[in-house]
Length: 274
Image (cartoon, rainbow, N blue to C red; front, side):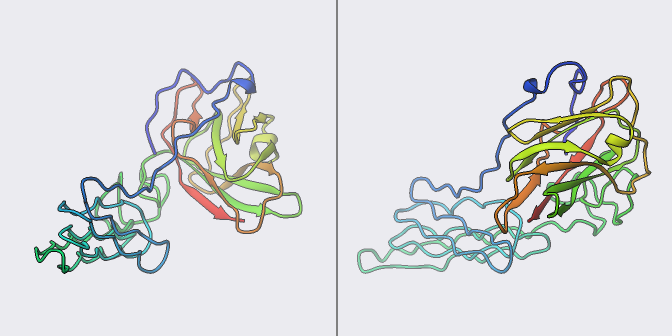
């Protein structure tokens, strides 16, 4: 979640003016000057081992992803250092450093890479890592969401209706909202309707990049439900292939506006597999 300053939520204009690109997170392991590669991180179980450097160098960089335990670093094939273990996922253990390895070509010892850092654990009452807050509970509207993010509105994908090929977009809004804009990835969006937005007479639209927009020209709000989830809208998509992952992106394209067109602190961090 990020706090954002906006002039408004595109309450005037056309859908063609909506943003069409989203920054992507990189999970590439980077090695330079003979550095050992970082241990990868799996979505479950242990990550793959980090590779050793082929010439003298320091341990590889840790890939700060979430998932299973970090992989162990391996020693270099000559005198390269072992890669660092990957960072553990939520509550996961960091990987072990690589062992010392020598070869017939060189008897110089390689240095094992450092073990990866243990992952943060949201809900333990301790603010760790990238957490914005951690109050040790899952109560909404107390300033700290169950995802350890701060804000007044939280968007999530509440399910997929196979009969109509629609995603149910739920909102946990602690305040009245007067407009929303969010971006879906992984699927082709064809329209948006229904939900509390339609019940309150909102205008909704989408574009080919997966952007979804909703507002009311007369500033009729979607009332706060004090954090109780409500279906804001149903987003129609082209029927996806099995096991397709779809996500709401939490970046500058996520905007929730108040009655003055100013941004409300919001978060969206949800993916589901269809």
